[in-house]
Length: 95
Image (tube, rainbow, N blue to C red; front, side):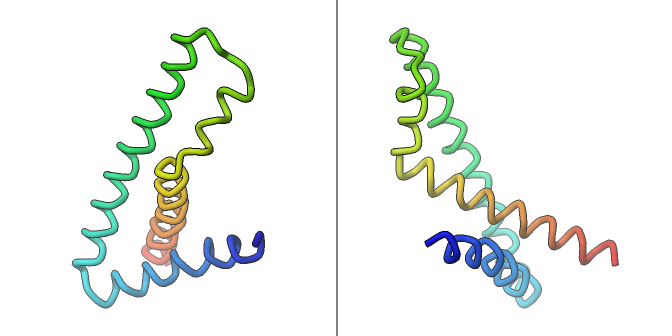
């Protein structure tokens, strides 16, 4: 499973780079998804931390419960792939 995650983390940004070079609409789509993911990721993180502080339940298990939220994991994964994709674009532009 770890190997699959590493391979996906390398291959998806390369595929995204190829697609955006083929059609510029993909670049806009990837950016829109990134904005939505960042808003969702930040909202889930902030509301979860606020709830933990409000409940005065600052324990490691309560804080790490945020990782059980599927939307948090999906948006975080997309943002990780998107950052590598943008770094790939930056690297190719600086050649």
